[in-house]
Length: 554
Image (cartoon, rainbow, N blue to C red; front, top):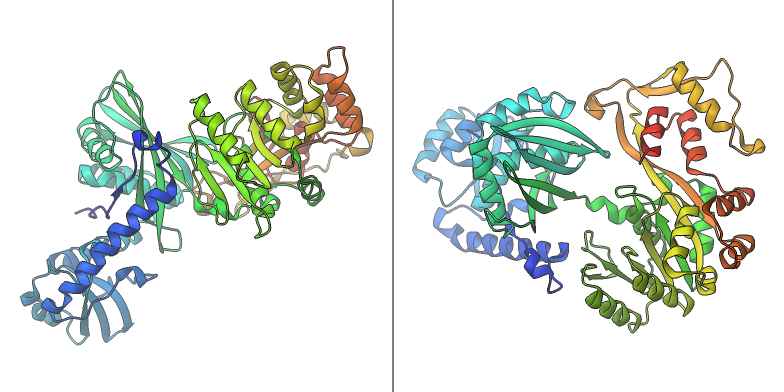
């Protein structure tokens, strides 16, 4: 038997988000309200059992008690392990579905061990037994997905996604891709930016749990249009403690059926720090100096998935204090930031976006974060805000800092306001970190060595690393900590351009300014390019040359 799916509460649909809802806060509120109702009802009914009520959410960690009862026996008697005080004293939870007449039989089965009981909710019961179940299987977490596939095949279809979501969360996956094929559905996890094949499920099982998932997320089954929804699952973290995990569901019809992409929101984002992301101390100091000004604009640029928004969140974490009013406009609001006013807005509705941006400006903010600058109107409004006493943070799609300047000039024209408003542009990519638990030093391959030598030819003479025959590079050989991948986590590869007077002059001159001209001026002023930062981090053993080659193609 497989675990019963924990209580999953419907989250607002895409239709609701059009009205400004659908945020993580909404999902949390709904989950909490429903759970409180369940627990209150259980407390009221506890008198019938004769056992005192216990809110199972107060139990931080479960001891499986497998020496006393198997998982099947716990299901048979409808009891859940709560506490093991010693070898002779145990505590179990019972529900309104437990046959109390069978408890003496259970007591006899426990021999000389004394069992006490408390009343818990049926939701709490399912959660606890799920935890007991998952604690029995650790092979999946070490990168051996064969056992996962076997157990997934045996799972009840409606419970299959719970198992998939749990494994994805354990593996630090950002996205779950479930893609229908002619006779099965392929499951892949995106881990540290790379898609990894995990398993497959048969078409019938996929259709059943897809229907259940769409119902929970308030998504129509069998639609011919792409759809979005949200759900919240209570999952177990790597410390075997429960945590509520929010997810965004995206579906799109394909030739073989509806494809699902599930984005897993990690609440660790609220605690993001620039230093842990890969910013050097001198880079953090420059960011602090720029953001200490009461006005101006800071842009983070790069392709999709390069960590632009994460950098802005980390900057907001540094700026956030009771004396500063921070407002964000996001599509959608993905992470709940304490002390920050976060406004959900659909950027594809230009009129609505412009209206909300103007409304935000009337709220007298000190700092405004605009999720992304996509068009001329947004760019001009953001620039105007940066010139009128606001620090504006935003993202922009461009390959490099100098390319961002050139592209912005193409968008708004030779505008002196832009040159005076912009203070800093941060271009970045995300490279996978070498797993520190299985890192080993090896002599570079001929390909790696040639790449390094070609790259450093373009570095300023005073910043060229010394390359000799003793050079060693680190690689991850794979271990249980990184699930056999060799990488664990990601590091930002950074290019930080300060808008100095000479760059500002290039931006305002009558003759056409190229990205190459701007980059040359920035390097002369001390800017480290993406290539230079990447190669130096590879030499330092933070990432690999193959990762630098991979992200340079993005």
